[in-house]
Figure 1 (spheres, rainbow over the protein chains, first blue to last red):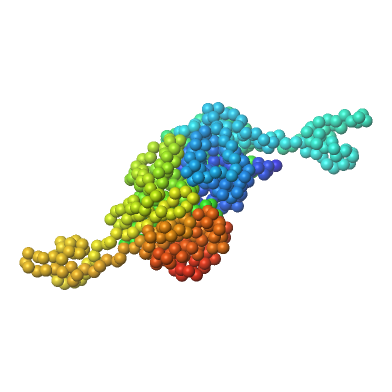
Figure 2: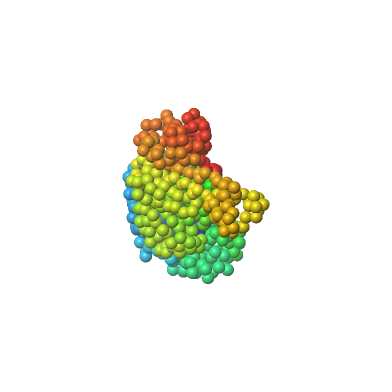
Amino acid sequence: MTFEVTILGSSSATPIFNRNPTSQLLNCNDKFYLIDCAEGTQQQLIKFGLKASKIDYIFISHLHGDHYFGLIGLLSSLHLNGRIKPLHIFAPKAIQEILELQFKHSDTNLKYELIYFAIDPTKSEVIFENNDVSVQTIILNHRIPCTGFKFTEKKRLRKLLIEKLEQDEIPIELYPLLKRGVDLDLPNGNVIKNIDYTTDSATPKSYAYCSDTLYDSKYFESIRGCDTLYHEATFLHEMIERAKETHHTTALQAAEVAQTVGAKKLLIGHFSSRYKTLVELLDEARTVFPKTELAIEGLTFEI
Amino acid sequence: MTFEVTILGSSSATPIFNRNPTSQLLNCNDKFYLIDCAEGTQQQLIKFGLKASKIDYIFISHLHGDHYFGLIGLLSSLHLNGRIKPLHIFAPKAIQEILELQFKHSDTNLKYELIYFAIDPTKSEVIFENNDVSVQTIILNHRIPCTGFKFTEKKRLRKLLIEKLEQDEIPIELYPLLKRGVDLDLPNGNVIKNIDYTTDSATPKSYAYCSDTLYDSKYFESIRGCDTLYHEATFLHEMIERAKETHHTTALQAAEVAQTVGAKKLLIGHFSSRYKTLVELLDEARTVFPKTELAIEGLTFEI
């Protein structure tokens, strides 16, 4: 199953040349989940050849503009381009008022339904679930209420050993039951042991997205053991005071989070515009957590 | 005096690859006026090496998103980048409510003052004036209230003939009076005739910006005789029915407007995303008005 994330923006606060503020597109089993939506997100999707029309779920971490100012434009373009299927928005409650005010003044009556889910920023809970994935909120510590999101794959069905099944002439009608892990007692007295004809599917993976936050152990539990951790790393550690003041994290701290929670891989982003190149941020994080990568525009990471 | 406009966006409704929705930056005597502000305008300014911090006046024609969704992001970035000087916004009344709602939810207290002027879309009037330029609204005919803007240079002071002034040893203290066109009777009985020492300054130029509108003779009077006319040309004339339905103009009609009002130059823009190349739109306009140019991203036109 595909489970990967494409980075649409790596800049904090303001865009700078070649870096856009935060947005990511998660592909889970060819269903598309947009995480945050800064100004210019629809242009970034076009630039990287990704189809906005395929997105059915949008998750907004908080209402600082560098995480949502592109939402109204994206939704408007979907409307103008003829979307009719519903679209789900998981975001702070006020997003609905903000969007509807702008639709009202542009006299826009959306041709598709927007289904809002108002995130409660005070508790970590599962806010979405389908056959592929569940999404749990992560309570972050920022200047305004802010939640991250942990996407966890659902356990997949067992894999059939087709060659063996064919060799023993097991009827094809039984395959779905075997995929579900069932042992079968046949009317003729034969027993089909599941273990002989299937293997376990891959272990479900998880992706934790921590957008804007002060380094704070309170949220560690909800991201413990995640496979890929995206964590903001706005500053180098020499700017730790500025990081605290603005409720952000340094590259070193992001790496410490990854190490502490036992993540397998770390992606860092949300870089201050003061950094014209990013190699120092990467190097700093890698001193603590070697499996760190820069989450920069256009890159796709397998979870 | 510099009087030129740089195009930041040429697309209608939705962005497409390499074309952004509408925004233009007018430079009049090294003061900067932003006209409309679609999503991605701040990124376009960065791309073309133009400083957002120099903009003191913003004019928004109407509240369709492709003309203003970039405003909140631009204003936020100016705040984050330390702006303290006031900024003037001339726009439909509701813009204030839309912006303030978003500032409230992001807990943003701007470090600079926003001075709002609510445009009355029912009358053509002068809404701004300084030593360089006056701005008059143009009542357009669109699906929601929409005004264009005519920027007219102020008459400049007369030009001094320095060589002649020095030759006749005219005291330098008198220069400012001569620039204002005054004849001088000196105490010693000498008369300094202005016409001998100065020449007229260049005739003031005007730039008319017609953003989104149905072809409608009602607004012709307010743009008559303008030097450069920017007029939307969303469709080829073969799409005239679609143009009427959506309250837009065809390239042929834009050229007819330019010809009818006696403009010296026509810029066309606001192109539908159905047109992957624009040469047909240009060719069509030039059949009626040869001095037509495509107003595309990054081009600067002297008025």
